[in-house]
Length: 492
Image 1 (spheres, rainbow, N blue to C red):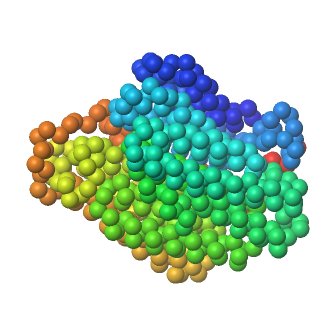
Image 2 (cartoon, rainbow, N blue to C red):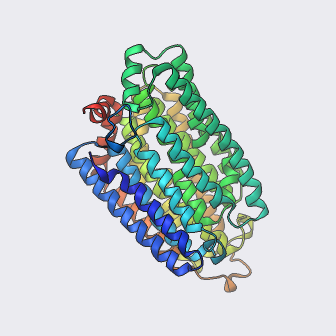
Image 3 (cartoon, helix red, strand yellow):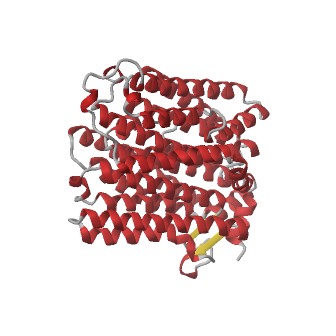
């Protein structure tokens, strides 16, 4: 057993509790938050080292052996996602220091920020479905507060929609968990995998599998994404960056874990439906990204396209495709955070998100403009940046498994992604300079540190993709061979 597994939850949890006592001291809150994030980052790095050298790590809370107690499991997929969460959380926090505003900082912004990270990391590390539900709710309750904090009319309207859809999905989640427990008699993921393999995934278990697919698709924005564009555009840029990078990825992780470990026996049913949902998500997301001329909307629809692309890789579920899903998931967490940070700063500087009212900003903000260009290329999958390797692996898997139509849709969506982001780049940074260009504000240090740090990671992941792939391949190997996960959890 490895007690380090709870550190990615325990560190932000303790940080959040400490922050509650310093409501009126903004400077102290910033320091405490930053130190907590750096400790969390260090814990994530150590966890990856241990998984790489010693294999899958487990922790049985209270000494209760599975399937009876709460278990935390750190395989390479979970460890990599926890590291990506820590990296994104750290840089988004630095960006928030200079942009979120003291009014929000005094009303518990930083505690809610840390609580959200507790829920995200807990979702990645938990080994049972009920605890996954609990971690989801910790994440969602924190996100409710972060969306509404500030109290503008738009925030209140979008928060109401966001809460209602998540109440619905959480209710369905509880119902799915109850039905599954009633049929199989356990909620431990490893034990579920064994028992379903023994009895066969048919009849009512297929119905439960589809119910879980609906629940996690709602949370990931897979096909059922109608709530996402408005909700993610309501809060400040730092919160939108955190949401765009992390929240949909938790839903995607739940889909990946569920349909590679538990419900993988009837791919003609489950994975077939997922393939159609992935195609619809990419197509509809592409229409949205191409149609709008508002930066916030374009960025949000790019999140939707990436969700569909990752679901395409999961629907294929070959070794190459799953390796690609892991690689692209890591890339997308970092790249989407960078994209939203730059987009948020761009809208702050221009005072608007409408492209028709922008222009010529490359003269005064060349650093921001060329970073946005690099990010656009990375998200579109242009080599040698971080998005290329994961996208290539997923497309290779699609061709090998004869998903030709779905591969064609994914390639077409990649061109729309590139078009939509280059549209922002050309409209905002080139052309006629804005009339009030001389009075535009300068970028703050938090933006420079955050954007530069994430941009370096995007470039490094692409150039060093062979090194990154060593870890990604190990995660993919566990996904394609669920016996590894089962043996690590149930061996005692």
